[in-house]
Image (cartoon, rainbow, N blue to C red; front, top):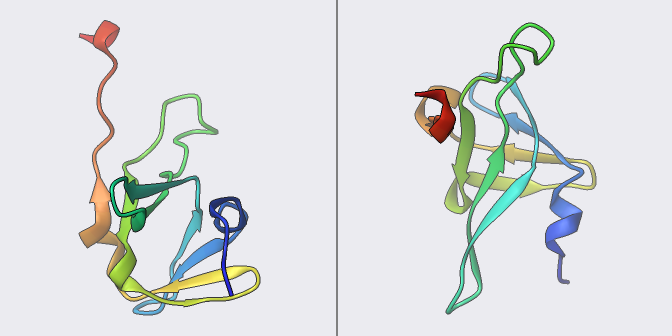
Length: 93
């Protein structure tokens, strides 16, 4: 059974270590020559209703994914270990 990348985008990611809800998948990292999925990206939470930016994104390696269900993805990694800093815009300084 196959799955499309768009099928992943509407699934919520939950960490099985502590039960933390990380958010919804927004992007997928793919290694182009082989076409293998390397990681899924979950955007960080908005600060003050999104007006002050966002926290760091979660980049979850594919080997940390334990189960992909109908509406949820269970991952086995600590949220602090899969944080990826957001690059600052060039105009920001």
